[in-house]
Length: 199
Image 1 (cartoon, helix red, strand yellow):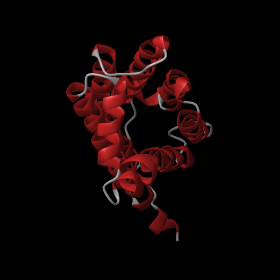
Image 2 (image 1 turned 45 degrees about the vertical axis):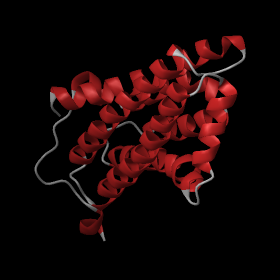
Image 3 (image 1 turned 45 degrees about the horizontal axis):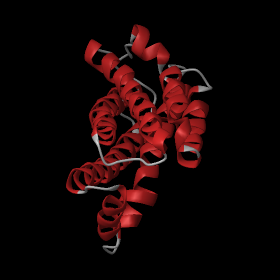
Image 4 (image 1 turned 180 degrees about the horizontal axis):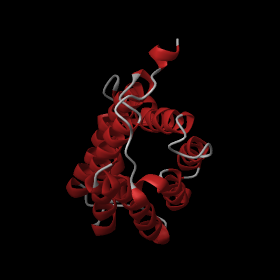
């Protein structure tokens, strides 16, 4: 695994955690956005998504780009796109609005478009974690990652979707799930057993 891939697996969760911390600070006055903290936090997450996408590609490669890891890569990528749209809209409405109420109204107008809420706010973002779960699960079966790596990803998804204030904790769990890869890297042999080969 290259240094670039290792950085992706490290910086993706770190920027995810930075967003979570800024989000907590932004809410200290009881209202989140619009403003500098709202924009900065969302930008952190958007940049983090780029690193996550690179990390997904690295995990897929480490697993041999087989059926399971490819499914994880494309599923996670679809989720990343959904989140990118959601956060881009949040930034845009935050820049357009003068108050939290106006920002919420603008966001509501976007969500009222048929299919938008399902694609970018409910089902779509879930695919981001499903993809991670598939990728880490595959690497766990290959013993490249520890057996508890996919468990940490699952716990992170449950925590962050249920209690958004726990996003910083979720970021730490994601860092731990892939820590053997971003700390020391890994190189896979040319031939990696695939699901089809085992069938």
